[in-house]
Image (tube, rainbow, N blue to C red; front, side):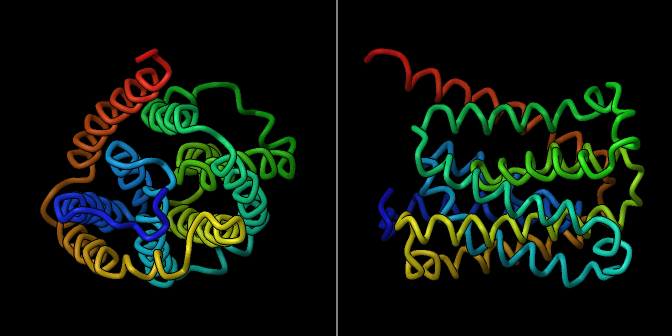
Length: 258
């Protein structure tokens, strides 16, 4: 990864388009920024460069979502242990990102997208142990979500499935999800920075991309009143499926002899 992020103008424009689209998703659904931005950026760059490009925009969007969401008593009061485990899991995920080659990380990201697309099927499995062992379930899903947050910027599938199974009200779920995403992003940035993988100057250089992401988020909020969530979700799922296939192809191509 080039820590200075010296990119050509077409690549900057492509990255800006990706972050606008991710902001649009965040504004329309209330979450999902890294689920869109990370895989699309990974298709264009190496994984660590994609993470750095994503860092400041993702952090800012999640921070705004957390502040806007309110309802702190209902979200933090009951589900704070999950957020704590996410922080710890994010550290180990970031270590995996530092040490792992590109191909396994791409496959892991594709796996997370497929898990997100299959969340309804996964929710039909026997999860009765969640109610019997609330502390262990918070640990398992929090650590898993944190690991994927630190490694591939996508903790949404395990955390979304977990809170859906618990029957958490939509507003509370959106708030705690964004809080988990924000905490995971802080730990990931600190871990990568301490390992010398990113520089503060490189992250701050992405302020223009952050402004683009915020513009997309504002547009997404307006889009809520013009397009149904079902229609937007259907389009999003089709796009994510295609992205997952491309990531798998990239990873397999990297393992094939030249």
